[in-house]
Length: 400
Image (tube, rainbow, N blue to C red; front, top):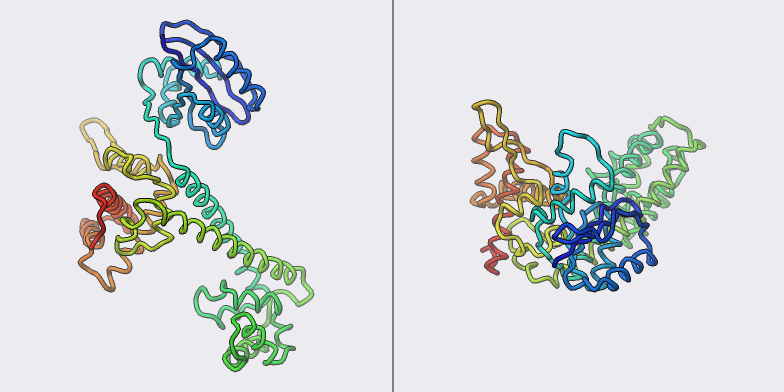
């Protein structure tokens, strides 16, 4: 006889139901909080029934909330299935809109016995878990950094509007500019300083000779003398700008540290060299791809990868009209989709200048000639890119 323990997972708690394949209910749906004593209680009850060898634990991937019960049951040698939430959506596809945790447990149990929940039983290596954790932290820091940079630019326009003119595009976010504006956060403050003092600040950041920055310091002072900021030097926004610069410097250092750890780990995986051999993909991009797709050879075919990334096309039918190539579903891993899209854009940009025979660039031009939008072309290139990566990894080869 076979048994299943179904968990309907929520935040910090789950509804548990234990049943057999002949319809016997050994544990009616009951709610337990996620803690050590409750997990051990369930484990003890299962051991008393002596059914552990024939038991499968089934739960839906629910953000991060399923991680605690998944870890406990795996560490205690249970056979665990964590399935895609899209499969569980089937339980809500009924005319009646009644939905409770108890009913969900019963319906998930029915799905399991019908064979609707696949048992892929994929156990990833620890290195992929660590890479994924670093990847998510990298994206989190990057998103936060972008918000802080937008606020920084806003405050800069209030305190010294001409500061951007003194540095090339994007240079205002580099350490030289950040350290300068942290010490001299307003045009009127700069106006009162000697040129040597301004040059010394920049030289000290980069450990270069004072004369190298004297010309730039003169330029900054000239702009400051004719500047009329939106606030005076005693405004609270001047302090806000200094504080924000410190935050940006700190987050940038944290982000670089995470990036370096991720690249170092990714180089230890078996397909790093295959992926980095693709034209236009550097260490960071390869590391992010591996962190999100993990061991890409675990997929049976390219359609599975596209579906996992949300790159699979939707099918739209209305009457006799059927569009088999609708917009992408966007139901998969958004981080994997993002890195593939960015890689495709980089490859197309670089290839347009120095490698017009590149297959991805040729595919981009083909889609462009079909009249597709720029983003639609790059999305199509993402699917082309993942096909190339999949083939290289499956054959353990590199791109010439």
